[in-house]
Length: 315
Image 1 (cartoon, rainbow, N blue to C red):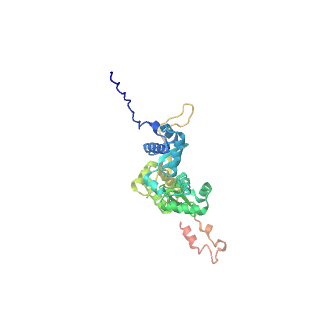
Image 2 (cartoon, rainbow, N blue to C red):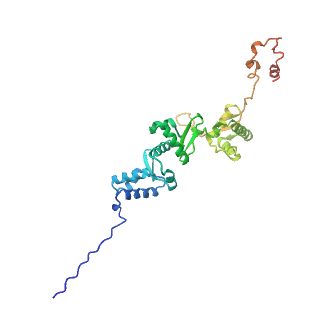
Image 3 (cartoon, one colour):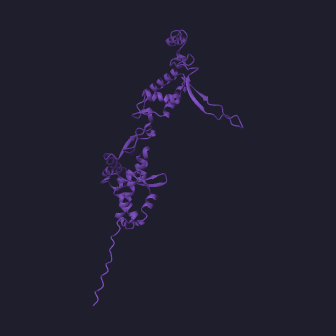
């Protein structure tokens, strides 16, 4: 009898674990979203994220994003008109652990205000939370070093709130001319004196020259930009201590007219006609005398016995 035919063995293929089509379900969606965020540490736009995980059903994507946001594993913010997602770092996630939805709402509103901060009244309107609850949330977030209160230089009796790691804007602090929210007149006077001495010594200086001088001598305890130095130099011009002179580059005129088309450079020189600190024409003592009405020749108060008049005549 013929031998039985050999049994045909059908090979069993192992599932392709690397196949993206098998990544379904909210849990797998969360893993895929976090993987994309790790590839983009500074954040990944919504459109780019959607394209990268297009194999995951939209419903699972939405559920995963909502869960990651609620557990503070994912952060969402706007960059222009684009929505951007970024993974929350582990050390940041610890700070958010145990916070309520109201706490997170207040944090997100403060976060959106940037380095200009937000007033309590404005935050109350945006959150629709009662003032007592907002005050408690502030204490909680401040204790975790998530936010901080900063005094506004224009209204020091009011505070604005911003993220703890942000540096307040110049609008809030007053810029380089304020120290501890107080106008630093002494610092400005020292800076003015040194800048005018530099210009008088150099005879001719550009704004860049003055900026280099300020940086080299370390006159300021904060970094001064060209804009701040220009403000100082402008005060010297307004006070008549230095002159601002425009110097023209190579001659270049428009073909159809006499309009100048060359480079113009502003240089600062010692004032050709310095304005004196005081003048006999502006320091007449009678103009500010509180007993001017009682002053008469030969009287108790008289020009002959007035020590201020004698000082002025000796000018």
